Amino acid sequence: MEVVVVRRLVGLVLAVGLLAGCAPRTPERQGAAWSYVDDRGITVTAPERPQRIVAQVSAAGALKDFGVTVVGTFGPLRTSSGGVEPEAGGIDPDAVTDVTGPGYGEVRIETLTSLRPQLVVSGKYKEFAGLWHLTEEQEKVVKPVAPTLGVAQSGIALPESIRKYKDLARALGGDVDSARVKADEERFTAAARRLRALGERMRAAGKTILAVGGVQDEYFVVVPARNPDLDYYVKELGLPITTPKNPDTAGGGYFERLSWENAGAYKADVLMWDTRPASFTPEQMKRNAVFAALPAAAANRFAGWDAVAPMSYASYAKIMTKLADQIGAVL
Image (cartoon, rainbow, N blue to C red; front, side, top):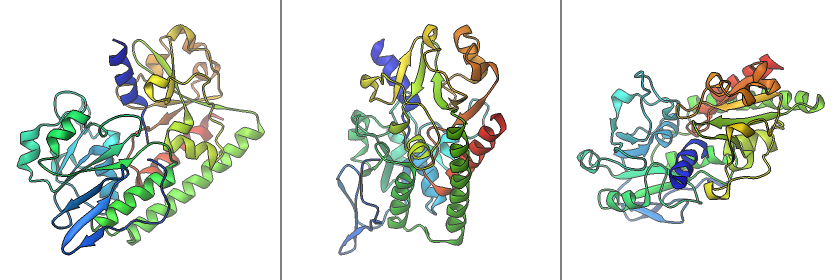
């Protein structure tokens, strides 16, 4: 049971690369072949630059925002109501083939093979074997079909995570210097300025933020430094997001796990809640009397945390603008 709970919470709270230089990487050329050193240190090769790409949904969303289309995806794509999962960003579900398997980290190999993929892309968390939404065992099955490429999604801040996908998109032929991408980056920068101003205002007033989520059996408080977006918000933009004292090392140190009876262990002026469908909404969390008694919960001072969104300027320009609106509205 413990393993199941840890896997479920890891799936909830993992959010986003290994330390790397800031200089853009370009694919290495050997004759007519294409190669790229991924964030596992693996040189991924192909006879030519891959055109038929299958990717984990948020990786697919990031590549799309940088001008690279994919033919298939795996991971959460459609909501239960038929909409697009936030994790998939701007991906049109009708324009791709979903190869997601029945269990976490599984893919439908026959469907994948039918797409004739030349490359499979997903995020990589250094604390865990395999790739994001592709277990180590499943990756071994996938590799004979197409080479796999991992993009680091832990241990770095948001801008570097975005640069990693921009570099990969460039190597795959995406027009990452287009007017559209430049406009997206300008909107990202403008949203960052708004959050920085809110951070200054909150710190001056002695106010704090707590990033939280919950499932049926547990409440959790997120560790900002383990997530590229929150780490950036704290260290670069100055948002006063509290770090819990006892991170769960078994889960990679991404959160502190608490019983609902201890949901009042940390207090804050604004609660950032995990917006993924597997995590409780504020209304669901407030069914717990301890949580509901928190001053921020009682006053409905909530802001959404989009934990697994595509790593692109377009994606985070929207997210940070919305976050600034929400925080500004409840202060």
